[in-house]
Image 1 (cartoon, rainbow, N blue to C red):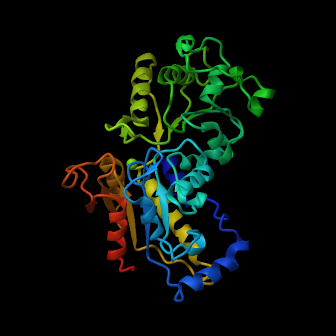
Image 2 (tube, rainbow, N blue to C red; image 1 turned 180 degrees about the vertical axis):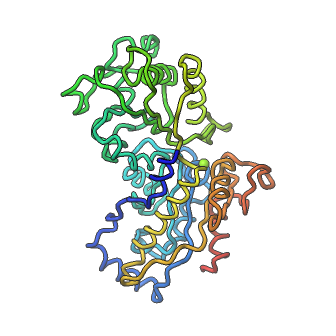
Image 3 (tube, rainbow, N blue to C red; image 1 turned 30 degrees about the vertical axis):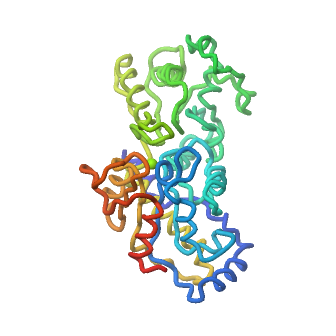
Length: 383
Ligand SMILES: [Mg+2]
């Protein structure tokens, strides 16, 4: 845990070169055009995505209009015309930040930098040095192995790919008509047989798809020290991108999330292994995630404004707003992070109550994200 604290407390090393130097002159020109005083704001906003901005793939709660209000009047809605720094702070994931930024941009009608997208698995990039060349397994929907490769992990297989290396590892595979076991196609597998290589760590990047197969294979990895089929050995580390018990998807009632999967895996592992499962969970409501979001918001502000305030240090943001739909994740996280975080709860997702939430009351409750942004801009006296 101490190591976790150490690496999480390090200032984020996220690359901000997306706001490339070649665009600086254009940026400066645009800023002067839009904001003669170039006064940078002293607050930033973190938006949860699912249940606040989107339900499934569709915008909700007036989210495109809400985001556009954070720019100077512009047809481009890009970093060069950004008035208020904001980030997306989601426990979701499964695709690289660059790809998610592009998708969100299309869904919400603004241009988004990869820097602005903080997903549940984004902190995994801080572990590259520890496992750079080790064999690691990445699980979950989407492109878990691509996510880890983009972070710099060199020897990574998805759980799908890894399982396909072992004959009969899933005794139910023949009944799963929807799956097609495919051969490993990653570079590393061409040179080394993954079955004989020790798995040094497991990363649950996004919600697992095939719980029965994944729990079986993960138990195999964890109880044998990373060599399925061999004798019992010390458990390798397992990292979860979040610990959400449930989340709001398209179905009217909440769906089981990664936290539910963790409980299932842990319960079974603890019954078949002499020692209890050791694991690390990231994502909201961890205070480290909010600290990191604060650093990233400052970087976004610098990308948008620093070129104008030549050489000047960016003063710390005085208010940070978390807009979320899940009291036990978004509100609890902002409350634990403390000043200067301020929580705004919407009624468009997990929370549907009339009054405030009893256990984790937000600073303000609103109907939707557009109302939340209205509230913030009024409070900060921004027209
Ligand atoms: Mg949510």
